[in-house]
Amino acid sequence: MNIREGTPEDAAVIAQAHLASWKTTYPGIIPQEYIDGLKVEDGVTRWHARLTEKKSIILVAEDSAGVFGFAAGGSIMHPVEGYEGELAAIYLLASHQRKGAGAALVRRIATELRRLGFANMVVWVLRENPACGFYQRMGGVQVAEQTIEFAGKALPEIAYGWPQIAVLCADAGAQS
Picture 1 (tube, helix red, strand yellow):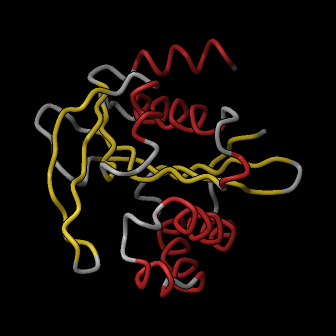
Picture 2 (tube, one colour; picture 1 turned 30 degrees about the vertical axis):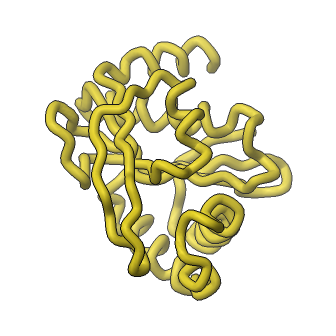
C-alpha cells in the first residue's frame, strides 16, 4: 500500500471510490433516493476542482490495482471550540476496509496538519455510521454533537476530536 498526495488526474478514481463507499456505508442512514441519484461524473467535477485549487490536503491510498481510498483535511469547516484542524473526509472501498489503510490515512492527515501548524483536529461523523468505532479506536473522543439536514432528513452527527494530533503523528513515524 502507498499513500500519496492526490493530483487532478486522480479526480475520477477518487470520485469512484467516494461513490462506492457511500453505496456500502449509508443505506438505511441517508435516504436511498439520494444515494441512488449520486453520479460519478458530478464527483469527478467536484474532486478535480478541489485537487486543482489545493486549498486542502487530499491523499490517496493505492495498491498494485490502483486507488482504493482517500482522505481530505485542512482548516476546520464545521467549528468546534478548541479545535482548528479537520479530517473532512475519509473513504475506502469496502474490500480494503479493516486492513490498516484507514488508520494510515488518518495518521498521514494528522502529520500533514501538524506540519501546517495545527495542534488538533476533529472529524464529523453521522452517529449511525459504523466508522464511529474506528475513530474511537484511533483515540478520538466525542467533543460535540449536532443535527444536520440531509436530503430532507434530520441526522445526528458526532464530532470526534484529537486534542493533540502529535500522538497520531508519533504513531505514523513509528510505522513508516
